[in-house]
Length: 133
View 1 (cartoon, helix red, strand yellow):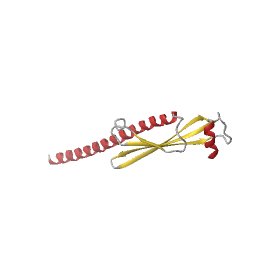
View 2 (spheres, one colour):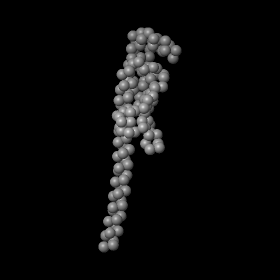
View 3 (tube, one colour):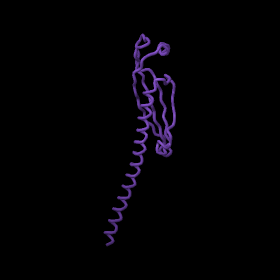
View 4 (cartoon, one colour):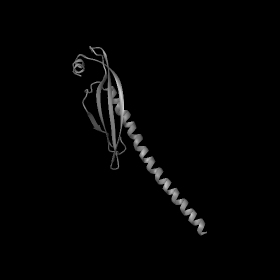
């Protein structure tokens, strides 16, 4: 009887340890999944907004209600990835959007980066910026 109780006790401790680890992993993956969805939404907004300034850092924080009570935010930068060597109004340029998402997991700050590209039609005021580059 004592041997059976000892074996059962070891099994229960192993089971509880496994459940504890699985719960921690599930919470970490839930936070990561939530932040990935927020990143996709932010990248879509940045790709659609053609009025964003070039080569200027942009940043913000996500609403905690939307982020599942996570302290999370983003930083972005828009730059020209490709343009004609002799740009003219009406030509196309390729913009690169670099987006970094951050969130706090306890005392640790976690991050990941996304890159996006969009085609843009050059306007007369864009030409001066490209020539300076």
